[in-house]
Image (tube, rainbow over all chains, first blue to last red):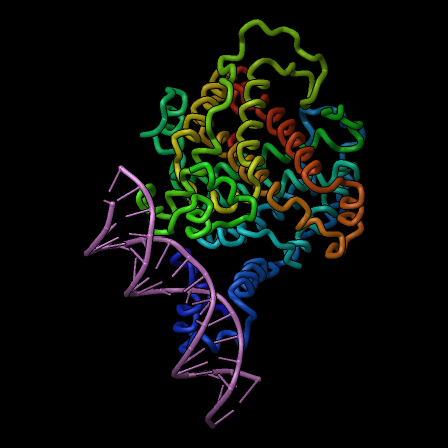
Length: 214
Length: 214
DNA sequence: ACCTGAACACCGTTCAAGT
DNA sequence: ACCTGAACACCGTTCAAGT
C-alpha cells in the first residue's frame, strides 16, 4: 500500500495509476480498499505513523519551576515548552514530508486515530504546563490552526508572495528581504512557534486568569 | 456567474450543475470561462470582494485605549492592533461565509489580486507598528498560516474533537469544557488573535531586535 | 482469497454547426 | 456573440466470471 505514497510525487493520483504501479488491473484494487477515499485515509494514517515517543510528562526531575514567577519577561523555557515544541514540529513535519498530499488531506478533515493520539499528548503537556481547563480546547484549536495553516504554506511557498502583484512599498520590501521556498516556510514556522509558546506562558494558571476577551 | 456561489451549499459542484442552474447546456459554459479551474478562481475573487476600507494608517486620533486589556504585560493596544485585528478578522470571515468552499480554494493557492491587496494593507500596518523589515515576511506568513488554518477549522469545527476518540483525561476534560460548532471556532480565533497580537508587541523595533531563533 | 474483463454512470472538454 | 448536440478521453465503481 506504500506504493500510493509514491504517487504524491505528482500531486494527484488515479485508481488506474495505483493499479499500474502494483502491476494489477484497476478493478483488483477494490479487493483491498472500499474506494478512493479509503486510499486517502490510508495515506493519512501512513503519514502520522508514530515516531519516537515524546517525553510527554515533562516534570520528571526538574523542580526549577518558577515558584512565584508571575512576571511575563523572564520566565525560563522549562520542560513543557520543549515538549510542546517537539510535538508541534512533528505534527507539522508529518505534513511537510509530503507537501503535495496536504490539500488532499485537508479536503475533508477526519479524526484519524493517530491524529487524536497526538492531541492527547498535546493536551497532557498543556495541562501540565498549567493551562486552565476552560481554555484548553481553545488553545489547542489555535495550535491546530497554526500548524495546519503552516502545512498548507509548505504546499505552495511562494505563490502568494509574488512581488509583481504587490502595490505597497512595505510589502515589496518585505518580499525582497524575506527568503524563498521551503526555507522561508520553515523559518516562519519557527517564528510562529516562538510567538505561540511565548504567549502561552501568559495563560498559565499561576499567573492568574486572563481577562476574557468578550 | 454568482449562481456558482450558490453551489457551495453542497460542498462541490459540477459543470453540468452550473449549466442547469443557468438554464443552459454544459458546453455553453465554455463560452464564458476557460474551464472548471477558472470558475473556482472566479469564486475566490467573489469572496474577497472588497468590503469597507479599513483605516490602514491607524494613528489618527485614538487615545481611547482600554487600559490593562489583553496582552502580556501593560503594553497598551494602540491603533495598529485594532487595524490589524480588523484586517485579519475580515480575511478569515471572507472564508467563513462559505465554509464548504474553503477546501476547494486551498487546493491550489493562487495569488488573486484581492488577496494580495489585503496583504498590502497588512504589510503597511505591520510596518507602521514597527515590525522590522527583515521579519515582516515571516510575521505575515505566521498570520497567514493562522488565518488559513482557522478558516479550515470552520469547515469542520468538531470533527477532530470527538470525545469518543480521546484517550487522555486531559483531552476528554478539554472537550467537555470547550464549546461546540461555529461558536467554538470563533472563540478560538479570537483567542489566537489576542495571542498573536500580543506577541507582535515584543517584535517591534523600539523594543529592540529579539534573539534570532537559530 | 485474489485477479480479470466488460460494463455502468458520470466527468470535463472540444468542436462543427447553428442563430 | 452565444447556444447546441454529438463526440472525445477519462474517471471511479460494480460484478459475474474465472483461478
